[in-house]
Length: 376
Image (tube, rainbow, N blue to C red; front, side, top):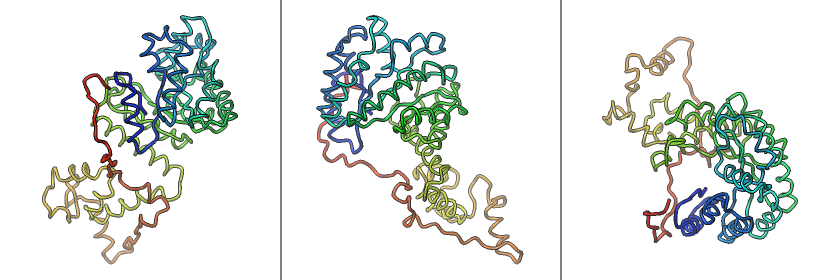
């Protein structure tokens, strides 16, 4: 998703659209504020102009914060962290300044017409989502969710596809309930969630805190997990931070698939477990989510090629390796028998997705680069 707020927004967006192998989404209110100068100076016409321009450029889905209504704003007064959605805070500031209803709500049918014309999907933003555990599942969040359910039906009646954004900070025991309320209130519209973080104490580790919530969200029925990096709440992530966040969320999504007993989901786990028991180190590295890191960690203490055939690692050593001891016991004359399970990932019903993400996008068509001095 393109969340850029810097310079050269049109150039950045059009290059993303031209070269991305996956759908591109935007939040047009960001560009509208850049053009207007302040949230208070936004106009209804400018919002619609930017929305239509981005649709013409070819974006696939667009976040529209149409569910935040003027009557919802007093429901946020007792919160700990107020309104933490950028789009939600902008709309709230505009409504407070003008004493008027959310223009995206008032002109929602016009936006539906634009999206229908250019085949753009709604991403209905949750502008009053909680920004802390203290604010989770409160009256403001659920009042907006009710409005999002109404807007979902309006969009569908217009022939426009819809997905709905979910909260970002939710105690673990609230997550399934939040998914169920969204699915009921929005008539099964796909739910995409920003984690959620299940604790607020872990700056620098929020990719882990949120991946825990994302796993439960996925198990409960969320359709899309929006990843979080270690820099969340702290600063702009770099490439290494993005890598850490994506790895955490790949684990979360896969764990949710396993928990839901989706066909073939556990085959990847079974295959690497069999390789681990067999001390097939090369196969373990090959099947690891991050083969390079798995090999590197192993080789830090046992770098020699001879250790790729060893029946132990440096954690337990040869004398105390439980799997080596178990194998030797099964090879004896007692009642324990050898293990003969073998998982063929090529025959797995989930084989196409249950592979380590080691490929790279084809960037051969990209011949120019933007200057990075002013751009995000």
